[in-house]
Length: 160
Image (cartoon, rainbow, N blue to C red):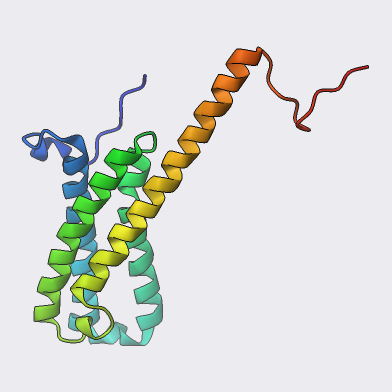
């Protein structure tokens, strides 16, 4: 079995024994930095206001990619995927709530509770779908192992 790649900064959190929580904390740090940079550019650099749409779409895409870290890191372990994602999202919700108190316009669209429910539901849905997918793959592998032959591409074997 190949070793997992290490995320940048992972060595700083080796005191957290649970790998799922460690990846969740690192994901939160990455996403919080991206969110803080987004807010800094939005509120502190008025010259970029005419590019607001592109700025927001780019920042949103970067944050979504960063939030996918637990999904890619735990692609064979749905339970750890959910724990890691939920830890990252819980800490991100706390960061969002702090940002709401600093910047009044952030909370006009979604509250902290709505953000938390959105993330928990999303990671839960991904974990459940991935778990079902892994069960189906395992069932197929067991069927192939028991019958001794793989099904043909058309789904049935040809005999002449």
